[in-house]
Image (cartoon, rainbow, N blue to C red; front, side, top):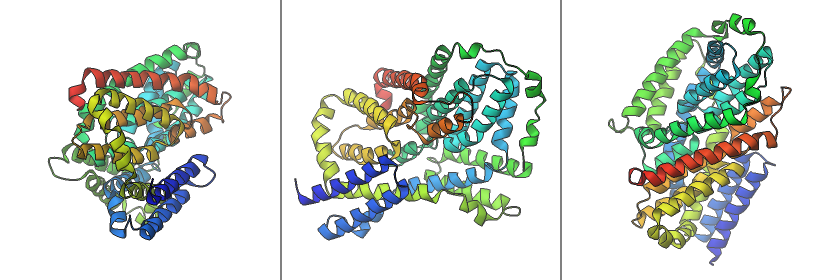
Length: 431
């Protein structure tokens, strides 16, 4: 093994190891790792400035930034709270109906918007409603977390790994609707059935104070109806552009940036764009950029090519088996580590296999389902999960690791089984 291999792998392993410890902010560790990789690349002449820039996926960063701007404007209007109260009233306080209704709401919002923001804004309202009705909030909170993670797998913009995989594999918004959406729909119903079985005792509780729930005025939650109306128009236009972007020859990032521009423009008379942009999570964008630089260093050092060569023969012998291995291994890893670094590390390997003539389409979709569904397996599997667990501590029934594992691991297994069957039965569609 050459010195370049040892240095680049060491930087990668140490950086990702420190990220997993969570002792320091992941953006700081990511930037440090990226800087070390660039310095090592210059010193050992395997990674120059041009290659560093080429390693950064600006399509992914642009798409993330554009959607962040739209969400930053919408989240302060009370729109999410309005929807939660409206949906809850339709259920008349019945526990199972609340699970289905609020779970569906978070799923639909997570198809287009950041599911972390959705969870942050929906969960507090859910807790208030369950406390009012004097019912156990755990089934509803778990449904919101698990179904938001599951729903995010369905679209190009539903989950950050989808954005990265879509950019690397050149998948369009419609590709996700055709290939991923049907699988997610089946997985979504399977998740609900699983939750109903697991929480059959809790869902038999008789709600109280239903009259107080019905008396809640959802319209009072809206703090800025004019902005809500304008941003919903913009969001509808953005969705339309996403559906047509391949025919219009627009990159997904350009669609999101057009949406960000329109959103800032239509609210500029009432809101300072500078204050809106301050809400954009720059740390997330820097973290993504750092990971691209680090993995780019591994790629230029030849590490990923070497790793890909080791598995090429196995892939050629049985592509379907390889896809299933990618699906389940990435899911298990996503349950215990952040799925974003995992995705960034996997993308160049699959991309290299494609240059060797391997039909990697099925591997891309296996990765989409694996990192997407795998996050449900543990309370640390996604940021949304962590938020739900944290918020549940405000209730009389906080969600513990054991509580989560009972439902989350079951849902992960069920949804991965659905994905496995889809890949096996419809292999040609995914290839």
